[in-house]
Each structure stands twice: as structure tokens, then as C-alpha cells.
Image (cartoon, rainbow, N blue to C red; front, side, top):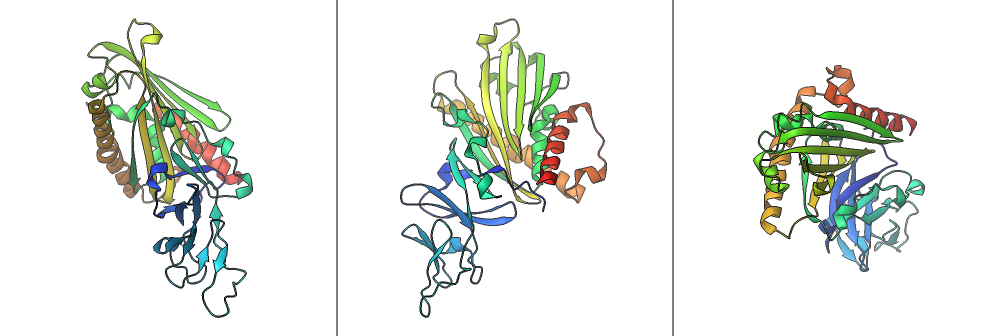
Length: 337
């Protein structure tokens, strides 16, 4: 499985990791995470080097994992500290790989490649996630599809008129002005509609009513599958400062070659706190992602029968600029690695 190893990936929402261990498959590898008594999050390979038992089946003892099979203990560095058998000698190879894990923006970020290259400063910004002025809703989806298919779905929002009718899209989306901008390894895929009447749900979200509006949908992509989506709505003829602009994230982490962890959120920082509106936004996003996007991506993956999109020589449309550029950057980075 060809993944970009020297990159930050989302391992979990920070609040997923409490007092118990959390096991996930990330980039084809089993990983176990836990919090030390001081609250610091730790990530280790979820495999005991003795008989390869999953460590998450064991228990935490003094900030160490005790394997449930034969009782070997490993500290947060992956070093074996106890062999309860025989004379207690600890074999030199009784080690478990540890992974750099950083807690930022209410997310846990993991580095699966060379730990010497793990620069937390390279994590892209998603400040809205921990900004108290934002009202955020969030979720998680596990999809049976390659993570680049999931990325394509966000980088090309031309699909929302057809896949999310009456919910997120309108016929103005196909007429939108689009641009693709590359800054280093970061790709921006921007779309601007004009004279658009929003679907009823979005009329409520953005407090636009049935007025005609401009809507911008700007996606920022960073390797390997980290996307920020900024959506702004401005009634036609009004000054820019009257716009309501939401921030969102769509963060794809490969579980396996054909399975993807999808972490998503959407936030707004206008209006009064409104639990009913938050519930509407959350319900609408779950509907879009879990009952519309996910089944389509999974059906595409089954129909493709491969993870190599290029080998099938897909027909290209004008709307494919963003995903194609992101795929090229990622392919080049993996080749260089």
C-alpha cells in the first residue's frame, strides 16, 4: 500500500480518547492510543512483539500497557519494562514502535513516518475548531473507499447539485466561476456562484431566506487528505461585511487501501447560541455525508475494482481541476519519498 508516510494524519477527535485505550487501523497499521496520568496522549503500535497480541486488549498500569496474553509491559516510548517470566530478562527486541502524537485543534494528529521529520509546525491551521466564538458541530464516518476518492469528492463540489439536491446544492453551482491555485504543495479549489437561491436548509443555516445571493465555496487541500472548506453567503447587492461565512474541515485518514476514516466539522461565528440550529446543521451534514456521499463513494470503489483511478482512463470534465491537481501533488510526494 503506497501511502505518504512523512505527513500528519488525524488519528481521532481529542475527546474520543478518555480513560480507556483506543485502537484504530491507520495507514494499514494497527495503532493503540491512550492518555498518561498527566493527560498527554500516546500512540504505539498495537502489537506485542512476543506473540503479536493486540495491546489494546490489555490494561493500563502506571501509564504503561500490560499485554493481556503474557503480561509484558511497555511504557509510552514502547520500551518493555517488565517480563514477569523466568529470571525477568527483557530481550533486546522487546520493543513496540511509538508514533509522534500531537493534540491540536481538538484533534489528535499522528506521524507514521520518520519521527525525526515530525514537525508539529507543519500541521495545517484549523483554528475555528477550538475558537470559542464558533458554534461547531462535528462527526466521523468510516467509508469503504480509497481516501483519494473521498478527497476528490470535496475538491470537486460540482457534484452537490446532483448528489445533494434540495440540501446543499442548486443549479447555480454548475454555472459558478471556478479557479485552481497552487501554493507549494497546497491546492486551493474555489467556486463562486452568483444570483443563487439557496436550498431551504441553507436558507436557514445562513439566515439568507429566499433572497438571491452570492455563495463562495473555497477548499484548501494539504497532503495527504486535509481539507478546510470556507463557505460564504452574501445577499446580492449588499457589502461584503454583511456576509455570513462558515468554516469546515474534511480530514481523510486511510485505514487501509480501501477504507477511510473521515473526520468532519462545520462551524459558524454569527448569531446567538442556538441548539436547535446546531441540531439541524448536524442532522443535515450526517444525511449528506452518511446517506449520500458515503454510499456513492463506496459504490464507485466497488465499480472501479482497483485503487488506481488513472489506470481506468477516466473521462475528464472542467470541474475536475482541483482533484486532479491534488492527486498529482500527492503522487509526486509519494514517489519522492
